[in-house]
Image 1 (cartoon, rainbow, N blue to C red):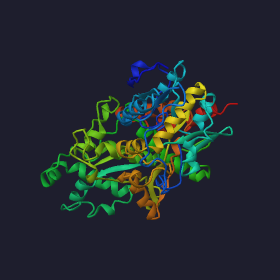
Image 2: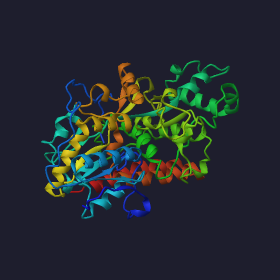
Image 3: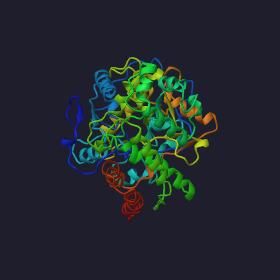
Image 4: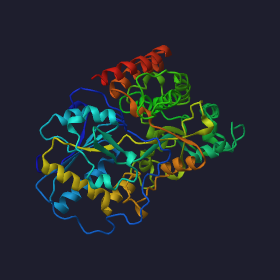
Length: 484
């Protein structure tokens, strides 16, 4: 590996076209793996976490170097700073490359084929373990694994600890509670309290009413709304929110009916809950100011729409929390003080549904790297999860909930969206498992699903084509990926 620190945001044009990835997912993204336990509390409870007020790390024990292929574009700056600091302190060269949004798996496959391949990469599920089996280094004796608070957050494959979760996340519908509470106080509002929004039917009625009364609401509240929901982008940088996360709820209920492992899935899906998907999707696109005919153009920025107060609702996850911090540099007028998160009510078991909780972000170490580079990589990852600098970056700069026992006290997650997952669980709600982690040949299946979804949305195509792609292509790719 060249002895220099590199900061690179890889663009699609730089990557050979292999498979399309999905946004902040991993198979999500190659996503956007994993748990169905029910809370995002996996971050830490030990009071004697390592690394508090520790001295600078010792100089490198060898001449190895580190190449981290980062999955989350929104964390690029923090990783570049950590890499530079670690190199300065230890002399170990650390290169961080961040894949373009929606292109992680394509980037990973391209980079692994190079002689200077990543030594750290992200995978989402045991299906990814099978795909990258030749690159999996056993982490069973690593500090990374020993500090994991919940062993279920590691991926086991072929007798190895193949990868370890680096964060624990939740997703749902982010909403502007300041505007929503103001709306609830207006004459003729569908509900008089945000707490009354506890089902799909109620949410849909509220969103429809807000969308129809935008001008009235702006006059009454001094807001700048253009629609109820932020744009539902169907471009490659955004469609993972729907082909992954929204589809994941349909899969979750399908797998519950089948009695199978909710994150491992099975070879067939019924498509029984595609009508529920359609209802939610229609709500998204019919209560937004975005032009339905251009949702795949890549011209929309849903996060910005929420951040500028142009929308009340935005489907996404707790990884968005840092983007709205009061000191954010995005120019947003809306901050975390204005925001909260509710479940994606699906019209199935709304009374008992909590947020979708899990992870598809697991660090794997490249077994094909030299032993010197592997050793350097393991030392770097240990420093990240035990040092004050690393823990501060993960918790406060990246806004993530880390599943390691070293993240105590001031390094416990302050992510308000993650806190909502715990609150719903405390109310007795059932967290939705990340069933989309079971998706076979994830990028291919999602692409085959998004194509008819786009046709339906933009050109009045048949919803039956969406159902067919969802069901038939699942079986096809499952058989393909499980061939002996």
